Image 1 (spheres, rainbow over the protein chains, first blue to last red):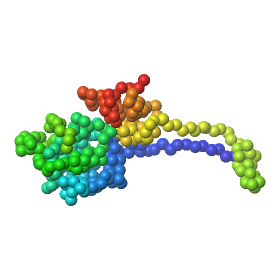
Image 2 (cartoon, rainbow over the protein chains, first blue to last red; image 1 turned 135 degrees about the vertical axis):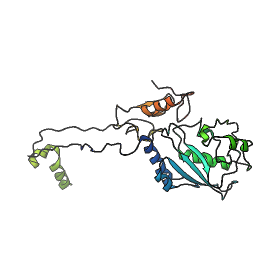
Image 3 (spheres, each protein chain N blue to C red; image 1 turned 90 degrees about the vertical axis):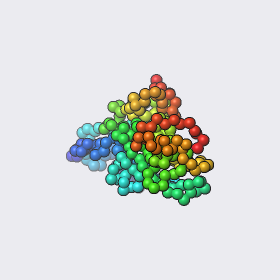
Image 4 (tube, one colour; image 1 turned 180 degrees about the horizontal axis):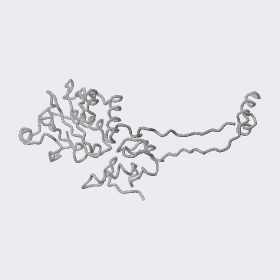
Length: 169
Length: 103
């Protein structure tokens, strides 16, 4: 006589694993950015692995644009509220792109980084926006209020009350 | 063809008791389910709709999906968190239309 007893094993460790909810999404984003990065974009895996909430992304100026051949670094910082709260994104390193919406301290005037943020956006979407912002630039120059802003702003660009007035560049 | 048919019949349920000399005393039916959504995963937490949001542990009725009038769909916990974090406008994360629950 045979008796078939099928029992689903009860896991002794919680199904959630070691991650906080926010980290699951960051892990997924990191994996997809490593697998299929947009052209000219590379994530610094070591920094992201050391601290999942702080990434460095290398970006190359697109061919045929004013930034062709230039290399930039973006720093992403994710708060515990990500993706409900936008990441803090600034240019770092010794080459800050000269652009009418990028301040010499690396702060970027881009509405999806503050009031137009949506949790449906991603690191990849931000990178694409920044690449497109650089690529459509016609003249390399700093924002008109650069020196005043750089002297008076907070270190965190999310604390700036940005006034988005120009959609052309 | 005949051989195949024979070997198939050997293992068919009708003949199981006869061939294997077993008596099935009880059995439990198992079913599968899935949400019928227009996407595979939630645009907010990026977890599959057939799983649960990243705060829950078990998929199903405790972590349901909701639809907006714009037809976009999210885990209820995810969209509620997003709407609660918005002070001025309650917008769909996907299309930025004003978020209204589909009745």
